[in-house]
Length: 522
Image (cartoon, rainbow, N blue to C red):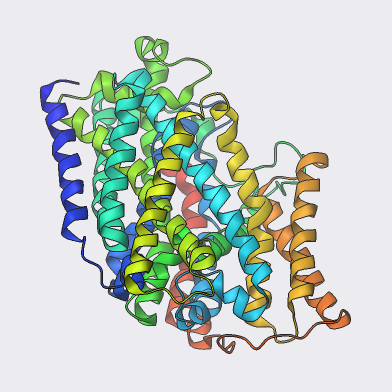
């Protein structure tokens, strides 16, 4: 990096500090955590996408597609479950949560079941989200330290301190509008990397002539994910992915808080529709970028020598350092920082919301001043904790990123099923739901420890099925009084059978066809 690159990074940092100051005035807690429910579908949709397209995705996914052994366009199969999940969310799960007028989605579980259910899931969210965020920040910082020349603590400071300040000041408005800007910068960075990579190769035709054809297979209809080598089969990725994404977008506070911030249910539907349609094109774009740069690595011994054999994730940072002009390097560093800051800002805000709503303020009548004081203190605490976790993540970071995905899949299915019991049934009660939740989690842990051949994507569906069956069945035979639903369950059949369903189901078929025939077009 030279002076121009540092100026670009400095301007970016100053702009986000200004963003927090601009949104520093909040009237109350809902204004701080939900932005006063003032958001339209575009900023919310881009905010959700920015959090999804993390720095790890920008760096690791292209390396998996273009360089990692056993990788390739099968990464696209992670997107198969998204459109159907968005349809289910907009028609079944999100409407009652939105209409309940809550800040923390876990409050819904106390109204329907018990305080124990609410507090248990809140605690699981706090621990897992803080840990995952710390590891993400560590991974980005160590990569930039190794390749670009920024020290670990410089990168950590840029990501952590700046994000903490603007999130602390501006609340959800700063997070959402910051994410929107960061998403645009990040996508521009992907396009620039792909364009410069194609230029180095000599154009698109030179790329298609040289690309490793074995990396172009994206769909495996034969693999069921029940033995090694079938991890990216169509059925585990589509069915397991459906349960994973419904749970992540609908029952994880860091994502559901976005939909709760929407102006009205019409905005919620448009936000989910936007996310269901835009994720695949964005993922396809950075996958093609990975193929392009991976092909350049294969054809350029000097490039290949700069990437350690055991660290293919260095591919994108090395490319930025060695093949891009100054100024563009600064912009791409900003893109990587943007992705990391987006994930961190979302975590800080949602962790603070759950802390205040589910623990500090639960059962207490807090004044507006007290609520805002606790909210900012909680945001500061979690921001600092995530940064501290990033500092101490070094000894285990090589294995923990995969472990985080597995830990998420241990819990996502059972948590989703608990919410479905709360929303969709009248007879399920707290004792039955809690036992079902516990057994569903234990079953997934058993699969992890003793049946490793079952691909972890399946855990989402298996855990959900066990929790649903046990939770409902035990509620019929064990003593307990069901509480009335906070909002009566009325599935939106218009959405399930209407225009959005036609669009999302059609898009589901389209992305399968694109994935199948992509190898013929490259």
